[in-house]
Image 1 (cartoon, rainbow, N blue to C red):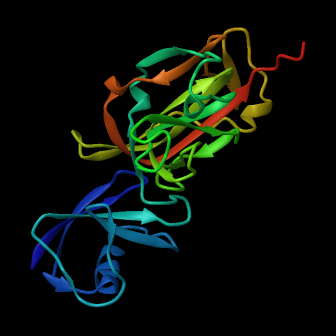
Image 2 (cartoon, helix red, strand yellow):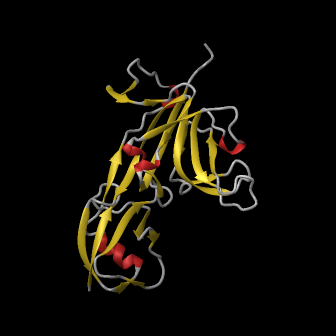
Image 3 (spheres, helix red, strand yellow):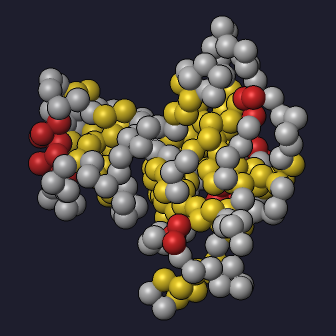
Length: 242
């Protein structure tokens, strides 16, 4: 027998259970179900990998097993700049920027192109995201190089000519637990922004961020990297029609 640390990812609830050192996914799920309410569709995650649903699994003493709701938590998380720390740099937008560093109004992802045949090889490139609501974890943080269209790993995000908001769940390695942050603002792209940069949600004022005219707000590498289980980005682009 071994002791396993079971964590319900959505709530952060932890419990220690005793289980066989060799067993199946469904045997473990049945054991867990006695102490947790398991979602209709779920994964059991260990070291960021899904436990296989077939065959015999070897378990180790004090192994950590995470219950992940497959219906609400898409993908398997993403290692990304810890934007919840809030350290930002301003990048002046210039017409002289190279083609791989052109930003759009709203969301812009930053990563390194590793395609040796690309003009922007080994350069930090920017992927323009035209969605006003974007799920970073849905594609495990993958973006496209604007020059060669190859996959790149997004490292951080910048916002331009917009109000923006973000929310989700991250894993706090120091505390060994998940942590929710931010709040979803329904229909944010059409929301009324008050003079103090707030939006009213269910009678409560929610502070939102905004960019400076002519500058892209870029989240600094000083924030470090964390694992996001959920990371949603929302923008309301500036209206320059008046």
